[in-house]
Each structure stands twice: as structure tokens, then as C-alpha cells.
Length: 321
Image 1: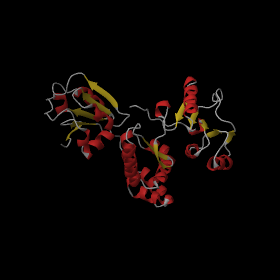
Image 2: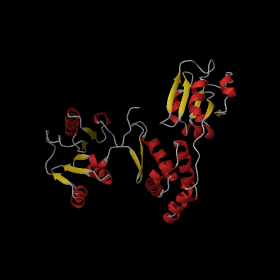
Image 3: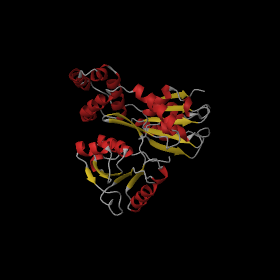
Image 4: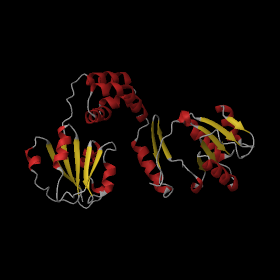
């Protein structure tokens, strides 16, 4: 990755916007959504920036950029129409390890503003690393169409009951499955329909139902030609619930990106067409873990007595072509 995606805690941001034109106004409006502390530095401000300073109660330093005045800030945006000033801001900020963004000059930036889809408190940030803005816009349009405005309500609803669910339902796979049923089903729809009281009552009833501890299993996934685009929905779903992942050097590492990020990874030195590390996988499954074992191509799994005699559930899935 050219850029490392990260979300900063807004209340800890002390931002300085250098410039008083339309570009500065757009950056100020974006920062205000996060309710961070904002200071504007510019001798002259246009009507939009002046209005934002007045209505939002922003600090205003009424002179153009001067060196030595950025030490107290931890986020700086250079939005002037003077290339020399922007370059100096970037140099000063980098020397003091302050995050700096120079509008339309990514080579001077230590951070860039992503394309944002706001479903507060859900935030989706997208970036093409500056390589394909049109493709990024197309992707954003697709995602926005699939995300109702009410998704933020679902997030707040989930937060309200998160600790209750965690205390009542043991095992991350059980909790993930529980939340999928809740959010995709009638309870989630009730939240979207603003019938929150009914949704809360139904959720409490669901929590009273006994949920058994998760049972371990091993899922072998044959990756065929090694193209992640051929993943079936069934395989993708299994990978999203993984507790542990096994793979060898013959497996395309791109598949690993589709596995639940918190899953433990166990790269194998011996290729699976020679030896399956069945005993380790069984040990984890017997502890209640879902084990995903990625296999290159589509060859028969080498015979393993321990695997054959085990009571652990074993499945095989094959990617499409």
C-alpha cells in the first residue's frame, strides 16, 4: 500500500488551515464534521471562510503564513494559491513531524483526504492512492447506492447492546452470527423504520435464548487458478468467520486479504500437496476454532489418519473458474 489507512480521534486534533479561499472553505467544512479544533491562518478570507469563522467560532490568525507558527498544531492543511508558500508549509511541518496536507500536491503531503461516505457513526473512506479518481468515484457511487441513510441508526443500535451481547454470547463466531441475524432480519429493519422500541424488545428476547459454545471445524478451500475474483459466496463467508488460517507458498497471498483480519495466520513451509498440517489444525478446531486451510489448485487432500478418525466437522469448498 502506498498509503496507510487510519482514523484519527477528532477530539485530539488541533488543525491549522492556511488559506482563505474556496479550497480552504471546503477543507474547513470537512474538518467541522469531526468537531475538531480549527484555526484559520490568512490575511484575507473570502465570504465562505469568513462566514465559517464567524458561525463556527473558529480561531483566526489574520496574517499570511509565517514560519515558526505551526508548532502547537498536530494537523496542517496548506490551501493557498501560492506554490512557494505551500512548499514552505510542507517543509516546516515535516521537519517538526506534523501531519501536513498540501491541496492538489500529493508529493508534498504526509496524508491525503480520502473520498468519504458518511453514515454517522459509520464512516467509509476510499482512496485510489491518486491513481484513478474516476474509478474511485464510480466505486463510491456503487457503495452509496447499497447503503441506506439509516445505516448509522443500526450502528448506534449495535453500540447500545454490544456489551450485553458480549456478556451473554460467548465466542466471536457466535456473536458475529448473532449480529448478522439481528441486523439483516426483522429487528434490523425495525431500526431502519424508526421502530427502535420494538427492535430493542425483540433483541432482549433473543438474548434470553441459550446460545451454545461454538463448535470447531476445518474448511479446506481449493483456490484453483489462484484468482481471488473466483471466490464463491460460500467460501467468502467461511473466510470471514475464520479464527485460524493455514496456507503455503503455492497459494496466492491475495486470498489472505479476504480472511477475517483478526484470524491467526499459520504459513506452512511444506506445500499442502505434499503434507497437510492436519494435527495443528485439529488441535485448534478441538478448541472451538473455525480453521480455514487454503489449498492451491484442486488436488485431492493427502490422506491423514488423524483427520479421518476425528469427530471434527470437515468441509471442502472449491472456488469458481
